[in-house]
Length: 232
Image (tube, rainbow, N blue to C red; front, side):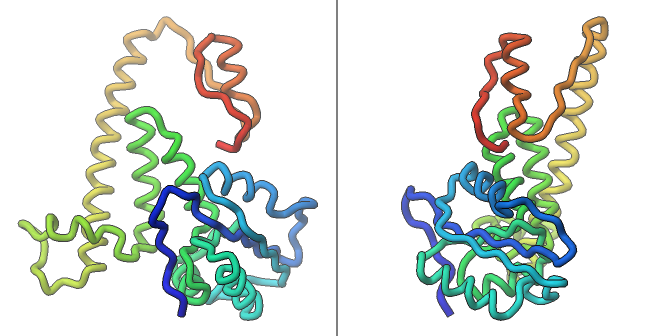
């Protein structure tokens, strides 16, 4: 099996896009157009695309066996670093696909969380995104926290005989607990600040990604927030 590709330089990761469309789904003319925009926003170079239509997802690999093999050949041909699905995958499906195609596999939610993390500017938003990523990734842990394992072997942690994955889960769970506590403190401080200026009205701009919220905010308030023609 091809080893998972490790990027060693600053070149963008090469990605393959994939999507399963169920037989009863109505889809747009280009079913991967939005995912292509998301993948580009995340900084990847899209090399190829694969779409499959079938009545239901395969419980093991999401795509059918033939399409998984086709995906593997795409990864090999383009020397791709990752495969991005425009669907949400189960942890088992992600693991099985990575083993089958020999590349890192991300689903749509992981990709969007990664984009949010890259764009987070405030302390509160960075905490919230890290918490969301950890909670989503916890069932998908694949030796993510190896570099912290030695620090974890302190009071309350089992000894060196503990399997690495168990250590990783403990570290992730502790970090989730710490993040929730810190977020609670930040939210309480924000609430006190809002109460202190209760005479000032609060206005929220709500809309879909790339709908023009930042542009409108700049026009109304001269806030000079970043406004670009890209998803998220």
